[in-house]
Image 1 (cartoon, helix red, strand yellow):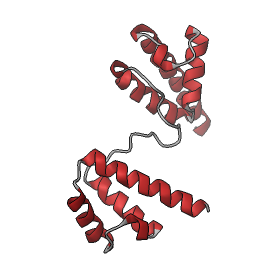
Image 2 (cartoon, helix red, strand yellow):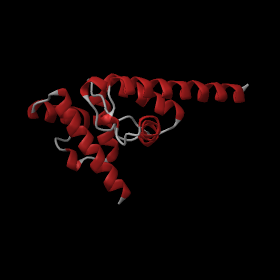
Image 3 (tube, helix red, strand yellow):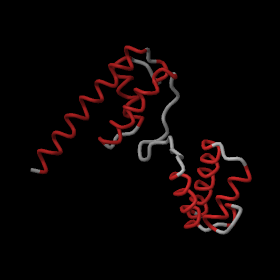
Length: 144
């Protein structure tokens, strides 16, 4: 069952990549045929699906979901760059978006990141940067 669920997620990701890259159906099917010898994801093994994903990534597909920290929360367009920075900081410290939202709740008493204004978003990013600096400093001291 787990393998089937993983296959479905991979197929969904392939279709997202198809849309993101703007591939028409003929081009998409030609890519599948070239990489795996098959013209449909439904007939592919997990390894073949991984090969297709690797090919799509080589062609420029970017998985917007940051692995390991969960899905980026709803946000305002002008905050996208800061949220990308926050995603990197969370990944470096092993935290999730829940941690960032909890920090925002403690700092500004707002439940969701979409409620933050520009100034609050800058302050949240700075606070998470300070935490990351301390976290990486402690890790480097333990390694020595």
